[in-house]
Image 1: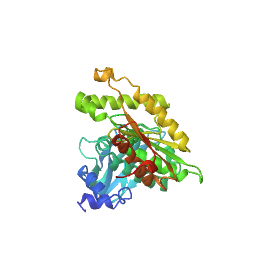
Image 2 (image 1 turned 60 degrees about the vertical axis):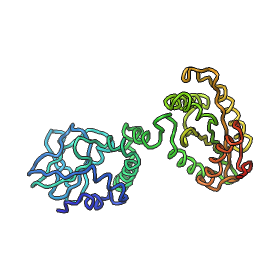
Image 3 (image 1 turned 120 degrees about the vertical axis):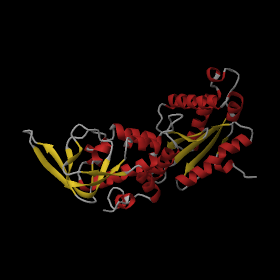
Image 4 (image 1 turned 90 degrees about the vertical axis):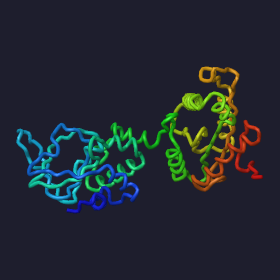
Length: 330
């Protein structure tokens, strides 16, 4: 018996590639349970909120056949993981598990916590764990997509936690950076990838004069309004603070300017009276525009070229629309 949760976790295929930081999170939510001979770990119909790793002993998985007779369908020995498929898919248990001869199991998560709780508190760790699970299962089972469906509640919740901004409902910075990187990898030679970033010049006045709660409401209002204007949320992102971004695959200079004018005119005309109690306040908005490969050879360099332009626009008095070549650092 190891009685060392981290060592046991690291010895399994599911957790073997986890970083020390991720293991520390997983370890803090894991614990050992002792079982007597033939004691049940779970039964058909039980919830599937956790997985198990055999530290010592043997676990027998049983399922009734067509005639209602129990049949041993799997056995797990020391170091084996079981129950993970149900945990990730959110399905109820459809078989029983019992410890033959007694033994010790490491359970994750322990206590009253569920994987959904870990998902909400540690979305990045959960995302990497789900990826490791998919790699593990796909290596041994064909058609993994039939087991972990893209539209399953757990997968959708995982994506929402990892990729959606909680305040505005827009795709977040992580989603933005990954989507832009994919746009580069799929970009045909000779075609451009356009990036538009925009930021209200006078948003600080809202927070200072009307309060941060009003500022948050304005951010949500802008997000919903622009999604309606643009037709969908797929390529709209909250980058950070009050700065948003729009990815435009195939867009060149003319199209970027056209979209900036469309969004800018719309935002400047917004009446925020219902939020601020003042129908005289109007947003001032500056834009940073860039294209690949002209302004960046990859996602990181393009963002680095475009992001500072929104602040430069505000410095120049606001309501500016700048390309990287317009920026002079003085």
